[in-house]
Image (cartoon, rainbow, N blue to C red):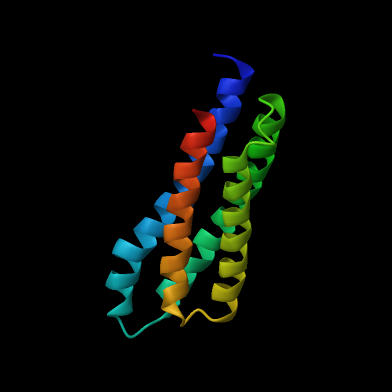
Length: 125
C-alpha cells in the first residue's frame, strides 16, 4: 500500500461517516426518537454526530486538498463543481444549525452530499 492509498482510505472513511451518519440519523434515529416525548436523546444523538461531522469534514478537507495537489486536479472542472457543492453543504449546515426545525435542509444536505460523492468518483476516474 502506498502513502496515497492511505490518504484515499482516510478520505473515504471520513466520507462514509459523514454521508452514512446522515442516512442513519434520517432513516433510523430520528423516526425512532421523534415518537418519544423526551427530545433530549434526539438532541444528544444529533450533537454527537455534529462533533463527529466536524472531525470528518476536517479529514475530508485535508486529504482532499492533499490528493488534489498530488494528482494535479485543481484545474479539473468536475473538482471545481464538487468544491462549489461542498461550500453549499457548509452553508446548508449552518442554516440547519440555526433552524433545525426546517427539515427540508436535512434533505438538501443529504442529496447534495450524495452529489459530492458522485463527483468525487468522477474526479478520481
